[in-house]
Length: 155
Image 1 (tube, one colour):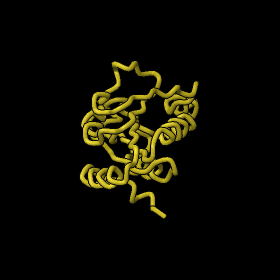
Image 2 (cartoon, helix red, strand yellow):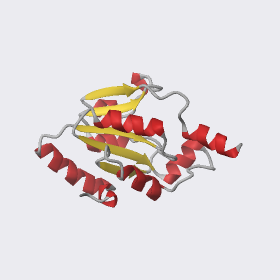
Image 3 (cartoon, rainbow, N blue to C red):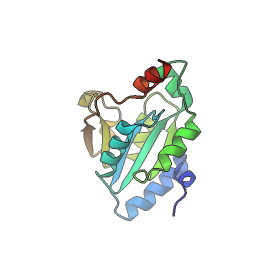
């Protein structure tokens, strides 16, 4: 059994793991996000993504990146905690934290067979699409968002 912490990889370790998976003929899928407070929408996109191939790599926004994208009160959970929770999920094979506001460089490294993004992105807006063999959009679950959860808790 692989322990969750062993699925959290830096770029070098991920590159080595990718070589192994590719040599085994595995179909590589990539998705990314902040995954601040894990909810049903997150689980749905992760399971959807995993079903598109043999290996699912999740790019995770760093704490600094989340703060720049979502505001000074975010993230609620640290990148270490968010990575561990994601890595513990059966659908996820690897988690790699990225510092930039977009996963462009990480997608360039991974060069996935399938890149999965939420349906709220137009195809032309999907960062890194030029490095993927195929891009698939996922229909988001209505009303499921970390921002909505935070608002509900604050009431």
